[in-house]
Length: 265
Image (cartoon, rainbow, N blue to C red; front, side, top):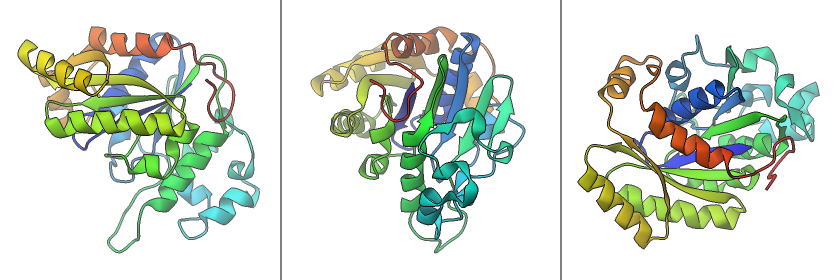
């Protein structure tokens, strides 16, 4: 199953990705985290990995040559119609226990150009990625909804929106639901994040219901997560475990098959 985690900037997408990765590892799944956010460079630290992998964009020949790399591949896995996650070259994968992470590409300097090649490579990689039974890919998307315009979600099974306590975040969740449906991906609902009170929870639920968005779970504001983010280190174990388990239950209960490239629902 391929799950994309979406939301506005600062909503806590990367934190939820890391929490879900840990939860599924604890359930015995093999987890592949796909970093398709061209801006965030610290996801590997949040996951407790020693260093970032070499971006897949370099395997494709760089931003100027990625189209040729996808069609010809230069003998790499990117030219294949089906990509086995275990066949990704080791320098392009960071590992810890049963957790693996790949990164599509990053913007490193001014005047480098738009991030469209990174979105196109994300789409094609996810479309060709074949997952084995008991394996899940969790995709950390860029902030906003531009990745929908690049067609990344056409290769995704399930979409989750992360919603923080702001109207902008609520409105974006409604848009994510609309765009997920247009992409052919199943929209599972929203995860309320960084919620400090029951009143805020009720207000967010009501605002989302007005837009036809189901609330999957509520992750409350945890000082330990804030401190870990500030320190730039891995998330502490056991924090928000029951809350994240509710999200994982919703994903696991979706009945989406694994083991085929592209959408499997």
